[in-house]
Length: 615
Image 1 (spheres, rainbow, N blue to C red):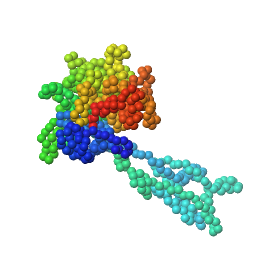
Image 2: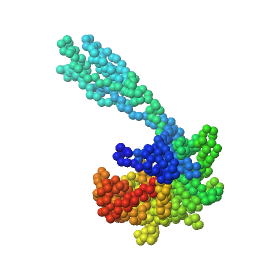
Image 3: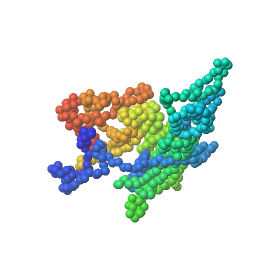
Image 4: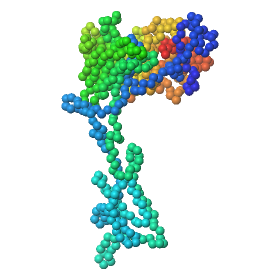
């Protein structure tokens, strides 16, 4: 029971056979074969979530994770920010690597320095001496002025007039100077007289505010005695940070990095794709073998043309070193091929390598440790994701929605099958598989989830050139990645088998930018209609979270004006499953109002949980 969330969390446990309910031990149970087993929960997992979670500290920023099926290991692409002195400059036809020091790249900071200057009231010339008058003899003493970081004007028994020399860098400020002029009553000519008012013995001196100027060090914040101390740029301004990408192999048991099984890339080289691809291989009985494909992009700045690189790697098994059992797996680079444009997406179709290079999609075959081109097609603006199923390719563009391509191996051509003509900022795409029917899932920048379908027989599809929008839903979270998992074939106990139609149904798991996880599952028409009526009834009966009506809050949103109405077609799983939390009288009343039985609604919801109980 989670006290913060105030609801019961249930995690299914996979066991061999049925469990005897008569045993009252907390950590003990009797399996179907008559054995008594003692179970202990793993201490490294967090159970305060619908799915158990384990956190792995990597001490870096992970970007992509890839699972290698043959060796059952994980490849993690991560990056670390390091200080760099290198910068590429454009020099005509090529670029030039320049290593620059801090002093050449960063200007000195500007600091305000205040000065006090004495001016003559007649000629407005600067007075460079301090006139010190004695209050007794009225003699003038000329004293040279020295400028310190802190001006200490200690006036005790004599009136001191202070002049601060500006130096050679700063202009003189303007300051009002008040004088007392003595005029002759005959010629009315003024005489420059500095008057000192002697207080005598009866009247005290008046109080005057004395301002000081203090210079502090920006590093230690200590006051210095000398103004104009030199602060070097190298001590104050650090070097800029540049990401350095690394691919590291991890063990699936302890999640420890495998020693000497990593690849570090150069500076200014960004890893865009790390993916499993199935390519032709004559040594395998299926004719294909899994490889690791890596795509990189050399981003030197806006003045230098971006170029990409394709790499094919494999995880091989070697003799482990003594005392280090994790060293049995190593990374081996099979080939490296530079491209004239950045490689943004990679996949495999019919045993061939598929990749998006710039504004083109290419199909290659591997021969003699080299890539040989077979076909290509011009695409839209920026293809950032490719998914292939048999000879069908699903491509997502960053601003022009999704497209479906077809690769014909006999003719070695790739052509456009259909696309969505509405401008959408696509974040991620994936297939939605339900037996013999296939849909296309797309998520956009406005947190919408849209399901498309290829229906050439529909009149609105213009002969199959336009993808039909069949369902939409607002997730309120931007989804960037999705993957397909086949539904479970058996119950968690292993005794009850699901219908054969479930074996060809896939659940699509998605992850959002705010750290959320969820899944989509195709439903039969009869089950969908029954749960849709349940959802409509619960919308008006249950209190809304934060006052948000589910029907309006989950509707499709778009800043662009669209003439097509929302397709809906997606059920809110959280709202539908809240039916099980209602009291028994309310459940019976809800089932009676929609013309169904309580057991039917409970079975539909439990079947969804059984089909997707992978975690």
